[in-house]
Length: 176
Ligand SMILES: [Mg+2]
Image (cartoon, rainbow, N blue to C red):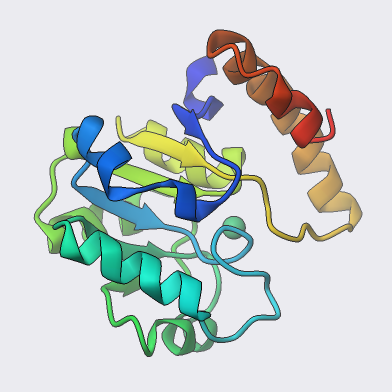
């Protein structure tokens, strides 16, 4: 149970998740969060860097899908120029959308990872299915009390990751 919130990998930015890293880990399918993982809430369309990253993944045979807790208009517009399977209103940490996405991509659990910015939704949703969880710090966090409380809950799992992987710099990065 306790390890279901602890990410398997952490990176400073989504673009550091490269095809070669994924290949080394045997990850062939990526279920990707949008808000604060790829773009801040107020960015409606992907920028060139995001689209180039998707092209790169595609060129190396990495299958991708969006699994987002945001609503269909946001997800559909963001996906307009990318055009991958997309599951809005996914209700992460609910598992259902992740399972549908994996089925659609024809990917098994051991070759699939989730990529997101939140331990309690993105990492937990994936890890309870036995997927690997790749976490990046939120691009631009909301500052309301609920989000601050969630970040507070995440701290000990970030510490655990940092300690396990000898990445103490993560603790300052996450303002812990
Ligand atoms: Mg997010």
